[in-house]
Image (spheres, chains in turn brown, red, orange):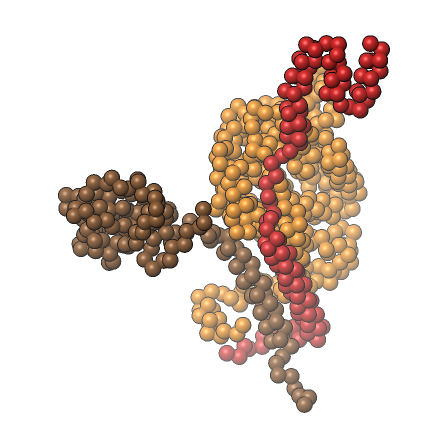
Length: 156
Length: 116
Length: 354
């Protein structure tokens, strides 16, 4: 059926076409720019692989630091001998924490936050406990992984 | 000696220095030994130096994987479609503007009150 | 887009009608040579592209002699679309200078510099010098063999100027020879000092063009020009031209990504037949024309003095061309302009193909 009058004016049609096409073009350009400006380098790893012998002779009530991507992880031997692996980064403003063997707690100097031996936040502003990792042993290697991550080692 | 020289000249024409030297074995073993030693030592140097002088470390300034190469050219095609589309639409707009301007509607009464 | 409430909100605070009236008043003459009007805008657009791609490059480039070359390789090989934005930056620079020269010779031959537009010419000429320096400083940041040799020659050449040469050379180089100090200094120029100067001068240049309006060539002065409003007619035409230039730029960037040579070694001899960037070739060729000594005086110094004189004359052309200042035809200066153009093209070609 042929219409007597056009549903939209020429002006609206042209402007919508122009504007729409321009938006599509600009978003394509913008997407490319964002891909460049937000690199995929330096993401946090799902797991790290360490040498077991570097951590075997650790004294009780002390920590040994390891690299977790760009930040620090703690291999922690408690006073009673049990092992814990956790991220050494405060849950408040992401400062690095330190272990105080005398108080048997982790201390964050930025805003005086305290975490106990199990990483639970006990004093100061930190809102959440420290992140705990899962430790598995594979032959001579120690695998420290995020909770819930299925570790798949590449076939060396 | 003359036969030596002729044979030597023939082998030299072929460009094979080591075989020429082999002919010399009969007449001068010590000379041959020194010459062979030099040839063996210099040959790998010659083999390496010649291409190395021209070989420049080629840094990949364009993606190498076929998957990425395909995506780059496809994106270029889409990009050109976008640009040509915009040019067509702009030409349509310009023609419409000029058509309306030719009607003379722009020369409004300047003192006409604006409707709020 | 019809947003009456937004319009009202703005109108209560700012004189929108006044701005609209001002914009509607911008008229562009239509005549045989009106295509030349687009050259300035194209150059401006390409400079904007350079600012944007330059900012992107600055996110990852490291201006230290041990890391500069490597950071560029990282940008080109490791980052998403890194090679593309670097290629865009390179080709943007090449095209910007090409269109800058087209704009320069266009305004020279059409005598847009004449009264009352002398300051437009002056600011434009200073911008030309700044742009050339942009090219030179940007090129050194590569820190490869060719760039290193080219900058050594360029700064050494500047040092041959009498009296001020030594100072200029030391100022540009930051030390006796081209070193890490030179790299850092050129980076500061390229990324901070020159951009702020450029922004200021382009602002003045464009403002003056708006104040004076578009210049109409002398030969057409007698005829009554048909004038077209810039908004919206010429605005859309300008946009179309800019989109075409974008297309050209992107195509060049994809098909001809620039190479990177080996890292510069200050102790090694320069590569065979090293040449500066093409926009310096005419200067190099001119220097080559002069013999080592003329009448007992240093040939190179004389060459540099003559070249400086020619450039100074070029700079002050609006003040020498009194005929066009009066509105009369000035064929002598047309010929001078043609000679300058031909000399530039010929010397560049000779330098390129030798």
